[in-house]
Each structure stands twice: as structure tokens, then as C-alpha cells.
Image (cartoon, rainbow over all chains, first blue to last red; front, side):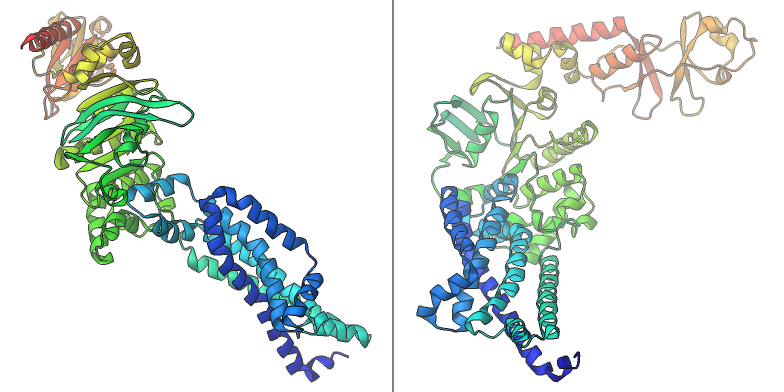
Length: 208
Length: 377
């Protein structure tokens, strides 16, 4: 029964790649959207609680329900899954962007202003780099949960490692389910490790 | 020249942080703002670089109202040092120091070269240039903070409790460094501290604040100690202001006695013959002080014993005649078992000893001279 694996090597590889794209790209979209929202929330603090409220309500929506809600507009496509997963990743990344920016020591911000930084330049060249460790911590959660949620996309027919679960279940073939499970976890771990490496590269200054 | 003209800072809740402050900081001088917490000293400082905007009144910098023009540009011409250093954790030491030159459009290379010069100037090894702030000690970080403030060679330097977060030994060395830098650079410095000792040590002028932003007295340190304006100032300055004031009086005019001083190779017989209760023993070679000998303890010893073999009492320190202050001399006398201060020359050789009577005479003379100076029109 393990011979199933080499026989289906190209299928497994394709599904893994699809799942990776479907899991990672929405997290990156979520990051891109979170940055400006985070800047606004860190600058005008009263904006953050309502913003967080909306984001949390969205996060509470079951993934399958959100996929189904998006189908009328985008059909049974990658786009539907990507949009849903982007919303979910936004929910975990945005609070970290805000926390990261707010965590910059006040003395550092004050010194930057007193040196003659303008507001935008201070944000981009001082506050953002210092928020990187916290932002990447959020991105790691976004990517890992994205990879696992992407497999649910299979239920609306979007290709991912979820195929191995549904197909294995229909054929009562546990090997296939195990392979899918191991690959989802392995994929998540690899992406997480990559992000750890990225964080270390971006923050050579951090005390370890 | 920085001029505060009737400057008030009132917060929306009605708290008055600074109350109609008039103050002039002359060019090239160090003005220390000192006072208890909540006296408005830090607020006053921050109004100079517009981190805080006054509610009313005007601040002039070299004759120009600081509210004219872009605050960021104003700030690039004013160095700023704070207690928590505010160094950028994500930038190396050299890039921290290069901050303002880079903001002013210098090339990174030129700014880094300048940064290394400044590290040397503030007494840091340029080998630290590539380190990150967290890899330095508190004292080193504070020096980097000073270097960063000086990088674009601003004429004005604002320092907010710059040395409060380090231990007393490091603090003293940073203060000495500031005095040495200031002797060379002649910046217009406004320094905030709650430590009156620090104010007296580093200030050319001391502005002592009352709570709620009122100026209690503005005077040079020696005058603040000698003639406090009222009980509040006297209380803040402390009950030992009489002794501290002696820091500003030289030992140049202090009368010294020649002895009894004997080299360590003299004998017990010579010491007995000197007929004094205490004898200062010196090293035979360089003439530096070795310690005090109680002649009462010589009775049982053979006459030919060299003094080097008799245990001498150390006790405290000597003072350098002409360089050290009367305060150092008085302290030396208090610590000496013989009650006499040992004065040495620049070469470390004993120049003579001063008794309490001689110290008192010097203190009186200095006081008389000070009063004459004050009464002169």
C-alpha cells in the first residue's frame, strides 16, 4: 500500500505546490493590507478597537461558510479561497502590526523626532524595522493557519492537499489520508522555518 | 543665545507646567535647569526643540522665534540627549551617530567617517562602531547618545537627565567628559537634572525651579551656594552647602606648614627629637606621602630603628596644592588621623601640611574676598 506514494508522485507534488500557494499568498496579501491599516491604528489609537472588532467577527466566521458566501461572486475558484484566507490572515497579522508599532520604545520615537525625522520617515525607517519581529510572529501564524485552511478549499473543488483527505475517505484508503496529513504539517513547518530565517536576516540587531 | 520670554505651558486639564518663564541662556555656556519632579524643567527644555509647544510666550533662538519654520529642520540644528539614550536599537553605533548628518543629506560614507571621529571625541573606541546599542554598557550607550547629538555640530545641545541612569562612578566620569568637551566645543547647553550636585558641577549657570514651573533663583553655582535667595533654595541646595561651596575656592592661597615631615629612612631618634604628636613620613625617593606616625607609640622602640619599619597610619588622601579645591583639602584633613591635610605638588612630592586652623583662615579669607567682590558696583 505504500507503493501508492511513488505511483502518484506527480499528483502529490502538484497538490503540495497548490496548497503552498493557496496558503502562503493570502498571508502575504494579508500582510500588505495590514501594514497601512496598522499605521493608521497606531497613529490614531481610537481607530484600533473598532477595527479589531470587525476583524475578530470576520475571524469567527467558519472558513467553509465564508467560501460559500463568496461563491456567488467568484465561483468555485482559487480567488474565492484566496479572498477568504486573506481575510483570516488579516485577523492574525493586523493586531501584530499594531502591537509591533506600539511596542517601539517611546524614548526611541521621541529621540527620532528630536533628531529631525518627519512623521512618515520616522514610521518607515525607525518604527517599522523595530516592529519586524512582532509582525513576523503574526505572519508565521497567518501562514501556518493558511496552509492548513487551504486544504478545506478542496470542499468547494479548489485543488489542494485536501484532495488526499476527501479521496482517501471515499476510497477508504488511509495511506492517502496520512500522506496528506503529513504533507500539510511538513509544509507548514518548512514555511515557518523560512520565516524564522527571514526574521533573523531582517533583524541582525536583535539580542539573542 | 536662547531667550525665554514669558513662556507658559498650561495643559488642557488646567495644570500649569511652566509659569511665565523668563530665561536667557548665553552662547557657549551651560545652563542647568534643576528642581524637584513636576517643576517644569523638562517641559521647558522640550519647548526649545518644539517637542512641546508653549501655550503662550515666545522662545527666541539666535534672535529668531522658533515657531517660524519647519520643526524638523529646527531640530536638526539642536542636539538632544536623553536619560534612556533613545538610541535606535536596529542601527549600529556608527549609524546611530550618523543619524542627523544622513538626514541632512550627507553620503553614508562621509557620515560614518564623521561618526567615527565623534566616537573618539566622546572617549569611545571606534572599534565599537559596528556594534549594536544593546551590546554596549549603559555608560557607553550614553556616550554614543552624546556623540549622536553632536554629529551635525549643532550650536545648541539639550540634555534631559543625561547621566541619571548610570551608577555614580560612571556618572562622575561622564560629567568630567562633558566638562572637557564643553571646554573644547563651547556649545550652548541646556541640561536638566534633579541632582543639585550635578548642577553645581557642570553648570555655568543654574536655574533652580519651584514646583509648577516658577523660577526660584538663577545664579552661577558658587553664588547659589553662597547666597541662596530664600529658604526654598537653601533647602534644595542642602545643609552642607557651606562645605560644598569650598569646591569653588582654590588651595593656591592656603598657608602650609613645612612639618613635621620626615623621610622613611630617618630614625626613631630623629622623630622623637621633632617633638610633635604626629609625624608625616614620606617615601625617601620621590617624597610622596607614606602615612602618619603617632609619636606616642615610638617610646618602646630602639632609637636607631628606621621609620620605614614602624607601621604608619594611612587615612584618606592628599590634595594637590593649587589644583584641588579647599573642599578637597578640608576632606583630607577630616580623614587624616593627625587632623592635618597633606598637600602635594603636581609631581606628587609633599609640599606641606595644613591644620584645621590654617584651613579656617583660608576659608575666612576667601569669604571676605567674595563679599568684597559682591559689594563692588
